[in-house]
Image 1 (cartoon, rainbow over the protein chains, first blue to last red):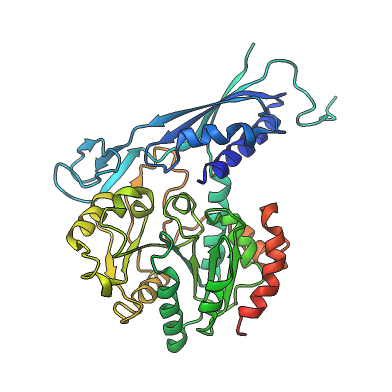
Image 2 (cartoon, chains in turn yellow, red; image 1 turned 45 degrees about the vertical axis):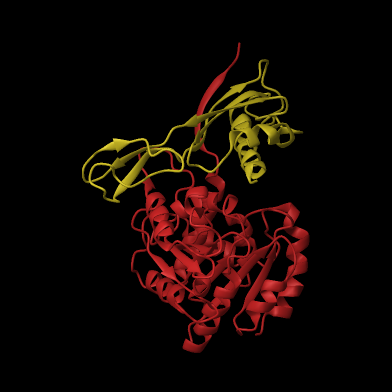
Length: 128
Length: 284
């Protein structure tokens, strides 16, 4: 169960981004989770509230989209969905020189910032 | 009005940066790390005992770091080899992360170490997601565990650069279906090498040591199925001989005093405490 660590990493990245964007808070975070990433979206949901506590993300909603795996054979260019558990041998030539086009993502796709004026977030800039 | 930003950031970017710095820092001092993954009880420690004793015999300078949720039993066992050993207590955490490892290595890793063996927490799920800066990722499976392990844990087996079958001397008694196991490994990780070992009979002794030394000498390790570079690959398996712009960071980190730079507050207590214990198990 490493989803708590994953959730904490998301919160950390988004908190930094919030500071960079001068955002007061965060209402929603969208994640792409590849089906081969070894991360369970339901377990992430379970941890989310706790991970967000006391941060700019408190009260935010996590929405994780599962990305189906797609593989491509390098020599023969056949593409297929390897499924889960994956079958990564090429169905065309049986070879093993394969690349995954999708399926191992663990990416923060986008964030919705809270309404309202930028708060103390990044601090007074002193530029005035 | 609701402002939205497309971030497109890898969740584990920080871990991956740390891992890269660690890999580059080790490379700069002529060392590589070997990350050992398996379920609990598959024989990681027993195999490592064999490898460390052999390294010692051959005069290859190695060091080992072993991670557990509790007890220093494995460090004690491994230290009998005479090799510098350090126990990492994860305080309940189910896996190691690169920043933790950097904290533990700072000021400890012997200057002449050619290989650093990292015995990860016994768990085939969580450790698979974290690059530790290793140049060789090894997954172990014992013959008593069932032939379908690779299918049940496709991330661990799918990112391995070497697979070891352990307790091979028990294969017949356990009715281990080797052909099925090999087919399952090939399905999730085409082309990965599988080696039979037995810590009890000595079968395959040195296979891991030889392979690790070969990787250090520049022989490329098996490259598992990789995510296309066009797609974000936040925690793709490590590729040896990667050179990035982090040398400075890595050196910097290694020059710090021991124990003071653990990224995880929760581990500080153990960091301080293990410094003491590590003296007890470090034969030097």
